[in-house]
Image (cartoon, rainbow, N blue to C red; front, side, top):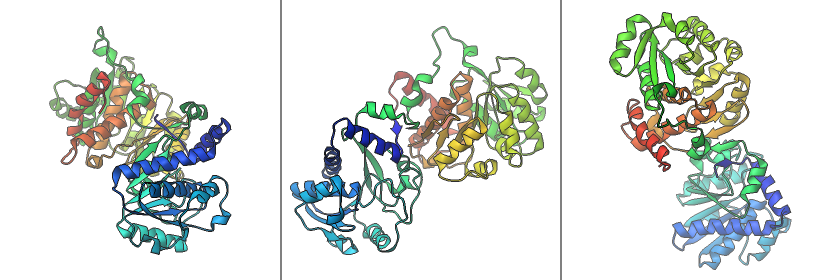
Length: 485
């Protein structure tokens, strides 16, 4: 269950489930019950305020209020609008609520020990403004724990963007599958802990909808890992070329360390002759070659993958070098300077991409390479992948990977310790090492992003980029044994 559904796909899943014979009332009852189960598992009996909107999210709120009261909680319920104007399952459940229905106002928060946010669901179409914005601000200022239903009100379920103002939740309970807004910033922060609960929508229904977005977890790409066989040897695991810079050698050395730890069978750093001794001294397991021999190396098909960009330098010479390299259609990772060098001529780069290629920009590099692509991170990554013909990985706390065919994945691991110099170079090396072993480019980018983030989360405070490659054997061992952490 790694799929992530857009709000439109979730509506479609609801529709198909109802058409198959499960009533909307049952789905709403199940949703409300699942929220209450989460609440009572976390907090002792106390005073709760349930804030309800005029749609089905508000209908969930009426179920939650009723079930909490039945469990012995003191419950106040506020509604946006009039009960008489509710329709469908929301109206049905409002009729089952035997308590008072109050007008929405900050007064509802007086004496509350818990707030349940059922104002708006993931499909909010307009900004929260005026009196509603004041209420949301009062909720956020109250210091009272908040449970959001579906998404915190004000968060766009598809993009994670805030429409006006948003509730800041401690816990968000959503149903069937998560939505992009649960994991894309800033929604990811505003949701708190995200809990996904089953409400009776069949897995086959989700498969029939064919979502193209997933949480980046091992189940997504594990089958694509090329583990070495008993009769394998180093040449079976690929020979990666790392194109190193003449002076900024640290970046290339980090790439090389990470690629070898990720499993590349052989690795050669190709650089200016004056710097080769620095690369060679970094590790006895790497080989080096002068950059003048690069074309000859690539004529040998055993050199099947390359990484260029980290520490290489920005300029026309870099552009020319990359265009030549792409002509060989090797598995290629372009990072850092390799991307910035094409800021004035991105179409030249995209035209040259013919083989399996992964671009790994941070936000600044992305803006230089795709200045006209705007919107949320997921939409931008997909648009960039389609335009460039490459798999595009936009780095950040909410790393997104997108393939040219529309597939996409969002990293869900929190690893703030990765915000350190050289971390991105390590990521490029991991992906290059996986591609050298024959892993498909989208899977390699996803697995690389997961390994990178998982290592960052495991190592924690004090992490420096050099630590990450050393932790890869631990994670790869867990994956090999089938028990990832």
